[in-house]
Image (spheres, helix red, strand yellow):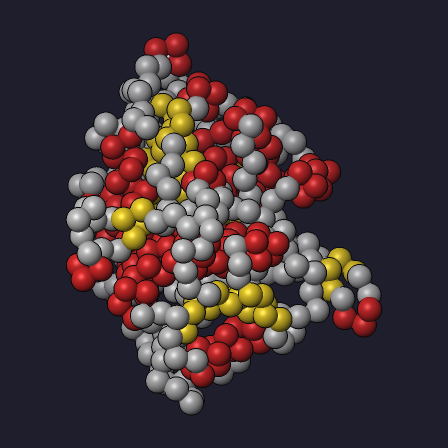
Amino acid sequence: MPQGKRIHSAGSAGETACNTAIPTLHTPTPLLYSTILSRQAGCNVWLKLENMQPTQSFKIRGIGSMCAKAVLEQNAKRFVAVGDSNAALAVAYSGRQLGVPVAVFVPGGIQPSIIRPKIELEGAEVVEDGRTVSDAYNAACLYVQNNDGAVLVDSADNPAVVLGNATIMSEISIQLQRKEPAAVITSVGSGGLLAGIVTGLHQCRWQRVPVIAVETHNTNTFQQALLFDADDPSPAGGGKRGAGGATKKRSESETSAPLSFISLLPPLEGEVCGDGDSKDSVAGGGKTCTRSDTESMYSSCGGRSRAGGGDVRQPEPTVATCLSAGSICARALELSQAHPVVPVSISEAMAVEACRRLLDDHQLLVEAGSAAALSIVGKGIIHQIVPELDHESHVVVVVTGGANINFERLEAYRQRFPYPAPIIAKSGQEIFLRMSDTALPASSVNSASPAPNKPDTASLAPITASK
């Protein structure tokens, strides 16, 4: 057994390997009551601290579940990941816990991200191949094809990933003593966590609890995907989805400008097969592999190009690197059509402000993309989405975590963005603007109704969350 190996069994102590009990690699995380956010919002605000996972992010829930299942059901002999990202760190940790070697493919000639040393510390082999993420991904697929027992761990649509992420809600249900929350707020990247949260809500019989899915303006792949589906005249379309969670049809007077899907990942060359609905064969093998949900674009991590012996910092397209997704998993889009999911995008300045406030108020440092979800509460936007909130309401913010952050990076953000940040947020066709920082709810430019009054925060009486 490798040093430090620790596996929580999902079954009873008497179960044997024949019973195929899937080990649990993640750790139950605290649900922290935030007094300061509760007073600002006029309701009970709880923080689900996924940054307390062994890999500093929620990724270990779904990826750990997928890896454990691959060992039991596929006799996996090696895990393969792409990119020095939070996902790859979760794969590396899972491999060490399960005693399975891990290979992480990354493009060469680029300065490693903050996460890479942590991946190597878990014992994973980092393989530089190609000049782009696309090259590294293709190399990983080829490796899987040519090595029996190699498994590419990269699909947010994988059922084991979704079910693993769903465990967040079962923990929250116990910690809230079965009290139904008024809303769950989370950041969204490729959609695996969102799919897990919605699945978990249904498992808890909380089908009507809205999920507020937060992105930044330049990583809003999910919101644009929903708008694209909303414009679809077919029965699968469903109309425009606004901040209230309801859908509304486009009027005849509105023009239909083409939507450009924002992708910070380079396109893949050639076709690769998928674990979901589309499975095309890959030349030279009968194995399946999907596009990586890699959230680490190397330039967006502040990487330095070493081409030609230079050391020039590349422009940073987003500070929310953990939200940069080339595509949204099909399961997340499917569930968002059947469950109240409200997409909201905010400015990067708002995400950075929330990151700084979390550190100041709770002494917790997470990635800006993770902190984006907190901005919905801290800036009062939550009242536009769930106007009936009062002092008895409970709102849960999933702090997704992330290891791609340190004080040096946070200081760079501090110098780059205004503080406090003006409110510039969008949900569907609704836009929220407020140039001054205030605890009052932001006003929608499309709504003539006044902002709801804040409840009396003196009467806040939070329940005691279970450990």
